[in-house]
Image (cartoon, rainbow, N blue to C red):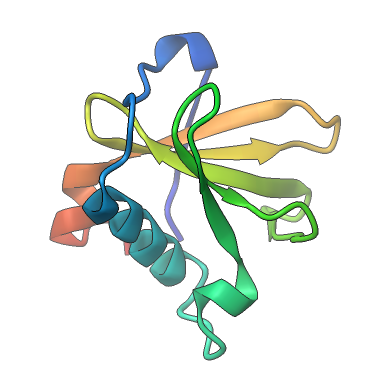
Amino acid sequence: MIKLKTVTVNELQFKKKLSMIEQFTLKDFLFKWVGRPTEGLDDFLPLEYIESVFPRMEAKKETTFLINGDEHFRYATITEENQIVIGVLDSNKELKHRIISLDEVLIGKHL
């Protein structure tokens, strides 16, 4: 399992728009991150591309995917520094962000 660093949102600079390649990279990363479910990512963790506030691949409202037992996955995005950011709600419904560099994803260090 990947050990993700927790950061505050004011430390991040999100991209203005995600290209199709970046969207597919995020979906591929999440597919591998959740253990390559046999039903596929779209059935297991359906995502939609949203651009309001900042661009992200967001879990549909009816989707519940728990991380570390008590954190709910909300979305994934990419920063200007090519870091993947995972947004989660903790048990207090507070939004937390975890990051991993896109370079680590591309060379497979995250798995």
